[in-house]
Amino acid sequence: MKEIIEYTNSDNYKLFGNLEMQKINYDAINSFAEIYIQTELNEIFKHWKITAKNPIKIGCFETYNFLNYREISLIDEHPLLSSVCNNSICCNLEGKPENKFTFIGELCYEMEKITGNWISVNEVITNFKTLFERENYPNPFADFIENKNDEILFFPEFLFETIKNICKKHSILIKKIDETNNAFNYENQILIFGNEIVAGKNNLFLYQPHIIAEEFVLE
Image (cartoon, rainbow, N blue to C red; front, side, top):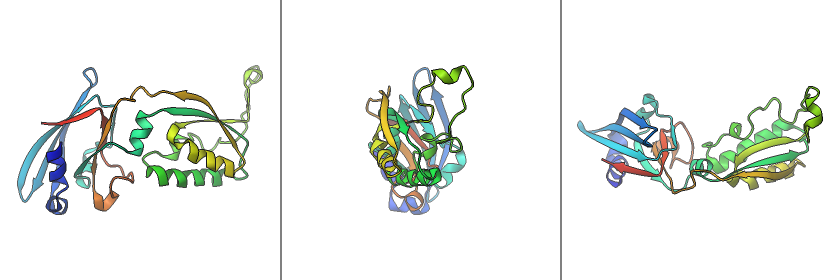
């Protein structure tokens, strides 16, 4: 992988190079994905095949995304890796903010600072409309439902302190009630097709093509 990473991140290629994804093969049974790409620099064409072993997430691989994103990076630590591969927790929120939209806005802002929007607030709050709104459960089910006025959120564990601080600011008590040990907690990396001018060091999500897998091999 070193060869193609250095090539697509060279100064000359960043200015004048092009990258085209020609084909992607995904074999779910044997757990691998093959990415066939072509690079062009000064009318010199090169063909590459990247094999991802045990892929667990493939995103934004629409062809048009590669027009802007032609610089390849392989990263060991990234918010999306933490979200997909590390543990998640389920929390109970007791209380209600004075203004739920202020609460949501602050949550969006703080999450974006940490994750660069690789994890959106919609993955934590699935329905803004009903958030902190009392549910009218039909009888006879209402009698069997505890804490009818509480909210349940499910999110990556590494976001807990951030969400806890926002809840505290709005006089909401947050409690962990369950934890999910992720099945993908072995060593993983994320391969990103990026553009330093557009998205920096891929610390901001702007629909860059990406894939998370246990290992990547250049052939």
